[in-house]
Length: 541
Image 1 (spheres, rainbow, N blue to C red):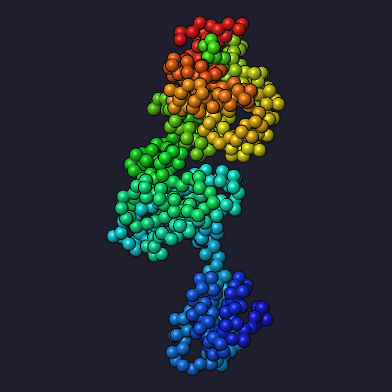
Image 2 (tube, rainbow, N blue to C red):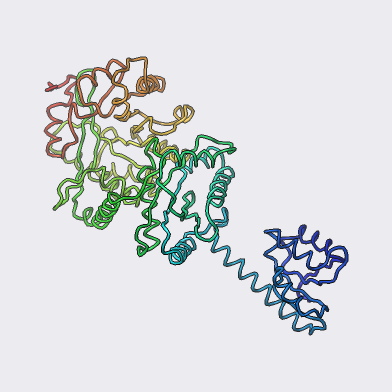
C-alpha cells in the first residue's frame, strides 16, 4: 500500500470520526468486522445513513468464517468482501480497481450533474426524460421551464454570491417537488431550469405565484421575478430536445410581459416558431439583395411644427410577402445576433443617402440611427462611426446616435466609456426608450447624452394627467434638471400634442405628423416642412 497514504483507526468509532473529519481525502475504507467500541456492521450502518460518506467504497476484510457474513456485508453497503487469510497482491489489485471505479464515477457524475446546483445538465436531463417516458407509456407528463428575469442585473446589483445562492435555492425547491424515479429536474442554461412532472391538473396563475413565493420565502431579496413555460407532452414520439425547446418558447412569450407568471405552449406558438425559422432562413439573402429598406420618421418642434430631425428605421420589403412589420423580425434578430449586421447596414445606408441629398441641393436636418445593446460588443463603435463620417464627408451635426436606456444597464462602465469617446468626436447622443430601463439618478448625471426620448407608452398612459402628475411629467422635469431636450415618440392626435406641449416637451415624433416613410417620400416631406432660415415652413397640421 506504499502508493497510498493510510490512516489507521483502533476501533469503529474512531474510524467514523476520521471519516467525518477527512471525508474529502478518503478514497476507500478497508474494514474489519471484529472491532471494539463499534464493530464493522455498526460502522457500515452509520456510513449508509450519511449521504456524503455513503459514496466512499468499503472493502470488508475479516476472518469470520460465517457463510452468511459476506451477503450481510454486501447488503449493509460493502463494495467488496475478502476473507482471511488473504493474498496481499490480490488486496492491492482490488483496492486499485475500486478506487479507479470511484474516480470514474465522480468524473461521470460531474458531467451528469450541474456543478453549482446538482441538477442534471441539459444532456443528462434529455436522456433521463427519454428513459422515463419510455418506462411510463400510460402516464401524462408536462415539461415545465422556469427562468429568473433580469438575472444578470441581480448579479450586478447584489453580487454573484447572492446570484448563485438564488440558483441553488430554486434548484433545491425543484428537487423537493419531484419524484426520484418518475420525474426529473435540470439546469439547461445559466438561470433557466426545466422539470419533467406528472400531469396533475390545470395550470393557473395562483399556483405559480404561490410557487414563486415559496421559492423566495426567507430569501434576502424579494423583488425577483420568476416565470414559467409549460409544454404538455401529448406525443411521446417528438424528440425530447424539441419538447424542451417548446417549453422554452412558451416561457419566451411572457419573458417581458408584466403580470404574467406562466404560459402554455400551443399551436399558435408552433406557427410562430415556423415563421421564425422561415425568417432566419431568409435573412442573409434579404440583406444581400437589399430587401431591407431604410425608412425615415420626422421629428417636429412643438412650438412651430417645423421639422427638426428624423429617425432612420428599417423595413423589410419581401419580394413575395410584401412589407414585413419590424415587430416580426427585429425581436428574432435580437435573439440570434443578426441585429448587428442589420444595424451596420442601416448605419451605412443612412449617410450614403444624406450625402446624396446634400449633393442634390436639399437642406438637411440631423438624422439619428439606432444602436442596440448587442452592437457595443460586436465592434469598436468609437472607431467605426468617425470613419463613416470621413467616408461620406459628413458633419456629425447631421448624424445622431440613439442608444436605448437598457443598453446602458448591461455594462455601464464600458458603454459610458464608448459614448464619451463618440461625443468627444462630435456625435450627439440621444437616450432612446427612456423610462423602460433602470437608470439611477447618479448614472444619469454622469451619462454624456444630448436628448431623452420617451416611449409612446407614457403618452398612452398619461392622457388625462396634467403637468404635475404622472410618469411623463416626471421625465420631462428630469430632462430639464439634466439640461437636455425631450423628444416624445408616439404622438398621434392633436390632443396628445397639446398635452405634451403644455407639460414642457420640446420635440415630438409620431403619426400625428408622419409615419415612417421610404426615402423618396421622405425627401419630399423634408422639403415642405424643414425650417428655412429660422422660419417654419407651412404645415398641413
